[in-house]
Each structure stands twice: as structure tokens, then as C-alpha cells.
Length: 354
Figure 1 (cartoon, rainbow, N blue to C red):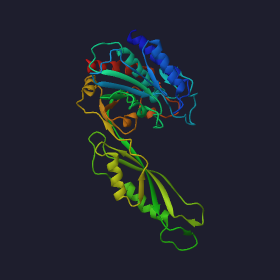
Figure 2 (figure 1 turned 180 degrees about the horizontal axis):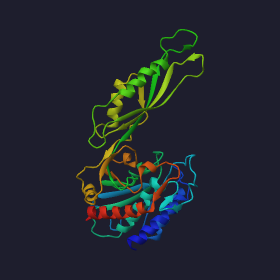
Figure 3 (figure 1 turned 60 degrees about the horizontal axis):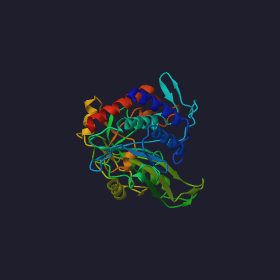
């Protein structure tokens, strides 16, 4: 099957995936559709919960392993949709539907690319394709659950919409629970330790705070207070105010270092929810990156999180579509973006796997 036919089938698969509800942890039917692709092409595959994966035909245990990964779960459609999110249809070159851009276009393009290389001999790397679930929820049964099952991964392409430019680094994430303390009392009596008033200086501290190390690719660590709550009724001064602080971590720090710094320096109690979503990157001189740059693609650092955070190897985020469309109402991807994505994936890997 030539590349044009493969691309047509990939677009048809994406339309089928859009028509199936596949919210995080509910991806069983889209996993079935992906299985059907492999059956059609006589490619042996395995399935672990809703993760479907396959290896290249001439797998050689002495060669390093390249992972191709993207996800088939989606967020729930927001209330601003004017089109049926589960009705895939094409208008003016745009394929509309929930998950079309994030990350269905990337997924089917990687599946088509894997199929293109499946039977090729004398590749420099083995290839494993993992169509994973639970990316949107960072759930326990997604790509992270596959890592103990798979052989050691040496390098990865994670399919997310990047306009087919090379995201050579991605910020990590730590979410902190904060507590600003005070003295509870009746509102009618004097109280010079009001937790709500105390939070004013605390919020200003978070607004002004800067982590000193700035990444060449990812820039500054970004710290944002995103939630605040306190008080139970009008005549009671609360004993504490609760905060949620979102910290996007560059590659100059580990998440543990960020937690240690804020725990020591913040003017209130802070506690991280999790430290597992670290920043990720790939060397700018890695052959996979060089292959993409040679085709005229640009490189950049990504502020958004993906399944790269689950990986310990060098990884590149790359895919058709535009990240700014993700989770938006009336989500779409251009058909031309999928066509270009498959073509560029194949060309990049031809340069890398020779």
C-alpha cells in the first residue's frame, strides 16, 4: 500500500475514533477500533487494558528501541460546542470532532507511519507503537502503566499537536496545596490575625516570586496561584485560607528541588500533591532532532504537559495540529495537516532509522 492510500485509511480511522466516546478511562471502544487497524494489516499486536501496542516485524533485541506514542482518550466536550462533538465531518478542509486535534490526528499519523515501517528490514532501531489511554487525566492505566511491560526505551516521539515543529523540551508540573493560617473568631470582635487578610501578603509573595534558574529552551519556571477558598459564613473569621498553586517546571530543576525550595521559602504552609510529572527533553544534537531540522522544521520548548512526563528517556514531542485548538469548542484539524504529518513523520524517521 502506497503512502497516499495509507493516509486515506488513517483519516478514515480518525473519523471512526471521533464518532466513539472515549473519555479518559472509557477508551475500550476506541481501543477496539485501533485493534481492527492492526488486524486489517496483519500486524500482531497486544493490548493491556485500553493500551494497544505493536512491535516492528524484524524486531532485534540487540538494537535500541524507538517508541511512537499518542493517546486515544479525550476530555469531555465543553458547553460552548455548536457542532455535535461525536459527528466527524469535513468542512472547508477541516475535520471537526472531539479529539480530532488532541490527539487523534497525531495518533493516526503515527499509526500510519508505524505501518509504513513495520516490514522494513535493516532499521537502526526497533520500533514500538503504543496507542495509550488516560493521558488527559494522568491516570494510572495509561502510558505510565506500559513502561514496566515494554523493553527499555531509548528514545521516543510523543504525538501531540505541534504544527509538526520539534518540541525538544517540555515543562514539568507540580501542584501545591497551600494553607494560610489565622485565628478563628466571631466577626463582631477585634481580630488582628485574620487568615483572609494574611493571604494578601502571601498572594503578593507568590505573584512576585522568581526561581533564579532560567532555561535556554523553556524559559522561567512559571508559578501561578489558581484557586483560593476560605470562610464558612458571614459572621465567622476563618482559621485558614486554602490555596492551590500551579508550578510549571523548566529543565533546570527537578520537581523535588522545586518542592524543597517552596517548602523552605514560601510564607505559608505548602504541600505538593505529586512529584512524578517532571520536565522532559531531548538533546538538540540528537540524530532524531537533526533529521527534523534538516527538513526545515523549527525547534522550541513546550509549556504544556503530555505523556512525555512519564518517560525517563530522551523524548521529542511532535505532531500535526495546533495546540491552541486543544480542548476548545468545535475542535478540528485540517486534513492537510494530517497529510503533511504522515509525510514528515516518515521523512524524519527515514533520516533517523537509516
